[in-house]
Amino acid sequence: QALLVESGGGRVQAGGSLRLSCTAPLRTLSAHAMGWFRQTPGKEREFIASAFGGATYYADSVKDRFTISRVHANNSVYLQMNNLKPEESGVYYCAERRSYGGTWYAQASWYDYWGRGTQVTASS
Image (tube, rainbow, N blue to C red; front, side, top):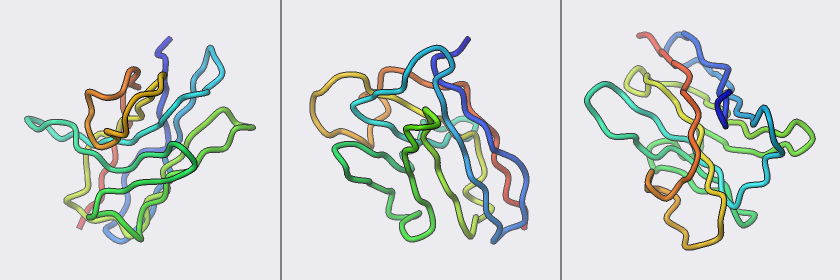
């Protein structure tokens, strides 16, 4: 099994909402940091949101519309996405950094583990 598994993607109309979930099937999710990234064909993974040290961080483009949260009882991290735009379609990946060290939350290479992604499509 994958170390992280995303779910909750799908197709919505522009302006609609989705809630993505990420969990660790075979272990307790006790990461130093969690992140969400988006990737479209031919592009690098783009930072969306992260949570660590009791704080949350967001790409400017999604502030006030997306929310990352941890629910420890569910061994999960979530990304609530509201008012989705067509250009925000893509494969959304959950990421985990295991060890302490720095705050490079927006850089994909900082994370240790990744899920296989879940497709999000916002149609106009």
